[in-house]
Image (cartoon, rainbow, N blue to C red; front, side):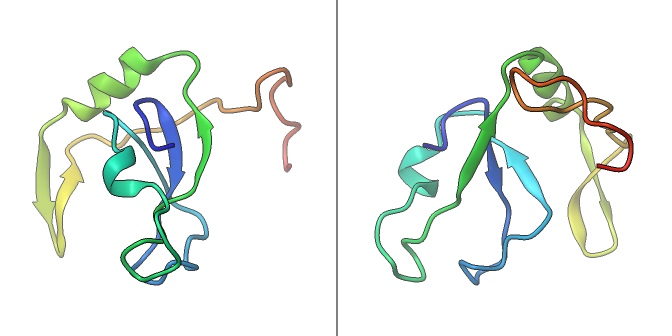
Length: 97
């Protein structure tokens, strides 16, 4: 479910277009973003992970005031770089993996 702290797959209006972008739910968005039916409005957004540590950092990033840049109305004023992400129970991935 798309609840606070879960990581979901971003996509276009095509329900099968998610490839490499993701979002972190800042609130319980399950009513709006969970699968309901195999229709254009009902496909929902796949959750594939969750933040288990550092949600305070996510909240800090979310509090940053965005700016307009080209066609993007919510472009971050400062770039955010995720330096470490790995599966729970596994260490950091080897370089190149």
